Every structure is written in structure tokens, then in C-alpha cells.
Image (cartoon, rainbow, N blue to C red; front, side, top):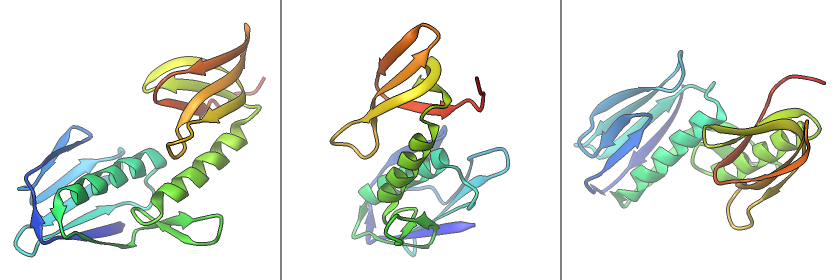
Amino acid sequence: MLSVTISYQQMAPMNVTIDGSIVNHLTEELQIKLHQLYELKIIHNRKEKYWVLSFPAESNLIELDRIHQLIEQLLDHCEGPSINDSSAFIGYLPDGGKAYIYDRYKEWREFILKAKHRSMEGQKVEVFSGIEKLADGILIDYELENDKPFLLKNVTLLTRFGEKVLTASDLSITATGEFF
């Protein structure tokens, strides 16, 4: 299990939702199903003023994104926060540096997504806007938003009907594993 500890001086009232579960400033302990086998465990010691989040090293990128967002939301409600994520190593960066669930997470995420999308070029993929499937076909190209870390602006596919450029909010690409 990987873990991160957030210490603080004061905690502002809050209600944060993650996967249908509510975490608030009064929460003492909570377990949230991330996957059929894995759980995010949250412990809050109000007296000692710290949070501990524990999660499996096998968590996928979507789960890591949700955990990272929860950490950011907790930090937003803490006065004088201090975070220790040295027990939550998730991978290496192109420069050989280490990335953790909070420290250098966004750099690592961008590196992983670039590699993922580069490897899918020329492969059959499905394109989604949120959970809605927009199309499937051969991935020709994609364009990123300039001002946000690895947010897709548009995706170009070769479909049965020709080349198609998809533009929508919350775009994502998933490999189908099928071959032509």
C-alpha cells in the first residue's frame, strides 16, 4: 500500500465527494472502493490534525487522478498544510526524477499520457467525451490544449466513412485491442 500524510494547523469545514462517498472535516475513517479488489483508505485524526490516505500500488491512472484530486481538495481546506507523500512513489519522469501522488504528479501524468497516446497512433481506438462514446477508428493525430496539462483539444480518426476530426470537452482515447 502507498500512503500520503497531510498535516495541518486548522481545518475549514468542507464536503468533498469522491466516487459517491462524502469526505468532510468530521470524517474519522472511510474506505472507498476504487476497483473490485482495491480500496482507498482515509483516516483523519482531528486531535493530532492529520489525514492519512492509503491506496494500492496497483491503482490505475484514473484512480490515481481521483486520489490526487482528493489530496488537492483536502489541501484547499487546510490552513498551514504540510504533505508527506514519500511513501507514495508512482513512477519516474523523463529526466530520471521521481514522481509521487502529489509531488511532480502532473509532470508524470503528462509524460505517461503522451507515451500512451503516441503508442496508439495508427491503432484502432475509441474516442469518448466523458462516458459518451463519440466514434471509433484508426488514430491519426490529436491536438492538446495549450494552457492545460495534457487535455485533448481534438482527435483525428480514420473511420469507415473517411477522416473525422472530433472536438468536445473531456475527450479521452482508449485502445480497442482490435486489429484490421
